[in-house]
Length: 222
Image (cartoon, rainbow, N blue to C red; front, side, top):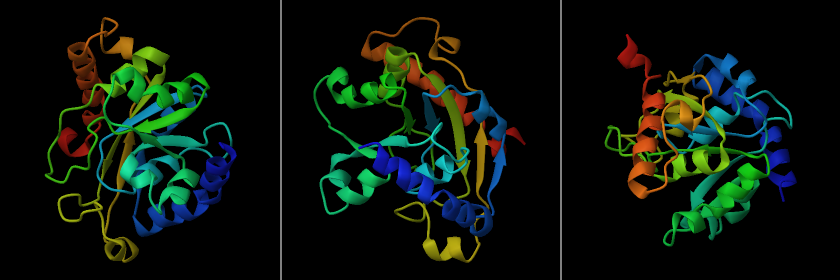
């Protein structure tokens, strides 16, 4: 099963570089942080468009050490005609309802099997143009699997104007100036002093994680 997303992600690696670097005028800060990661890790990022996963993943070096990068998706995107495509691209379904242990059982298995996952702690695209409260699942996974976390901040798309967060026309006409900034890899214990065990503690810990993402916002650092 993993062979399909691995081959697919390696196959689209070069086309994505052309798409984002040439058409998206992409600039990247601190890509050197990637080399400091172990083979298994969690990427956390703000969510600006349907292309975020692909924008970030293609910045990793080509090869099986970093790919495939998996990402959870809503069941509505998985159990439809889109299923073969999202499956091939590395997606897996997240079921709503039940305990956090049950909801994230698949994610835990991926990380325990030395896999890699990209998460958007706020859950949704920033359609209102503002920061949202992060979900507890991110800190749960980081605590449960003791995974290294790579923070990433994306800017340049237009999530408040387009449902998908971007326009293909504007992208292909080179009207975007995309920017991705990576932070240094860290562990949950580096930002949250205790091992979370309650919903309140998981949410508080996730807030610490998303703070690491927003510290990379270049507009606020100018």
